[in-house]
Length: 252
Image (cartoon, rainbow, N blue to C red; front, side):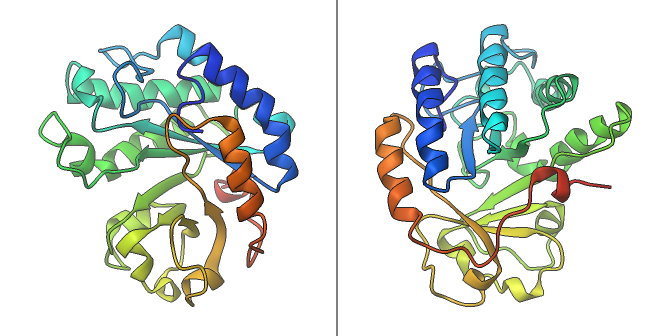
């Protein structure tokens, strides 16, 4: 649920639905810290996390961890990045979020800088799409600075076909593919786990053979019950192999 922590009401509905989703085999939920609608923004202008959003996020991460579920956190959205004071504030936001997760030892997380990074709507001279690899490095560096014994994995989402040896692919621990991105020859990939983002053709090799999971993206205003229905349908597809936990993906 992308908007799961946008309000107390949304969080309550999501927490109530977690057991049902887990029963249907859902192993991961996706949560956006910024979203398409005005007001869906977890960050202050200088890059600090808003206290009420941080508190809701921690409650969700704790509840998911109790059910052995992973939460994918998407940091930025092209409709909200104009609320940052500067490009430096975007960097600070990535650093501050990572530090907050480390401080609470939240390990059931996959981080994603942005989903629609190829959009033309980004502000600050298109800093996010132009500096995806840099933002990924900022996040990873925090685990070194804090002397952690783990590194949370980073997901890169693409709806366009990337060169299989591109730096963006090499940056990813998890590569989410959909649209034209599903046409990449994943047999050439040495590193990232592959996750299919609906809708894709699930029966086309070699993509399905390498897939670690299927990611269903509900509409931002979808009810938890709608997601349950989707989970029932998706659960009928047998994954080629089980996804690894984030600690395994990011282990040194």
